[in-house]
Length: 131
Length: 75
Image (cartoon, rainbow over all chains, first blue to last red; front, side, top):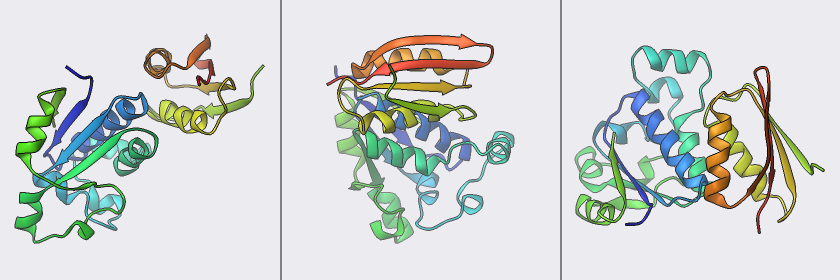
């Protein structure tokens, strides 16, 4: 079994997107291959050009993170991509039902649309976490 | 001897590790980076980071709420 990390990110909650970004970036910069599959409400948070207040919706901890300038989740994913082996896939079903093209998503973050069959199959060789 | 200093004081986890990685990427093999942090998780994080990446953790110390590390960049 490889040490690759596979994150299935479905929640649109700020706290969960933040944790996914933290896991992905830290694993990637620690030279662990990472793949993130973004679907459901989570995909909405990766729309191109949103301000943090529009992008992130959460509970009490989301408010605290915003007040204390916690690192931005999108920037965490970007750091993982820049300094490590991090691939991000946008769920093709979620893109389809939203009527979105890849260009609707944050620039230079996603490696393309992806399918769950391939992602789950690849994840059999590593560690899968669902958020 | 330290070639570069990274002041990571006030940075929240996981930023000290991410910023260290960013700095190390630009340094030559054998160069040393000193990191100063206030994140209490930094000690464990840098031990594991160095173990996983092959960089050498030369020094790890604490003075009150300030943590200091020196890392030698691997080849």
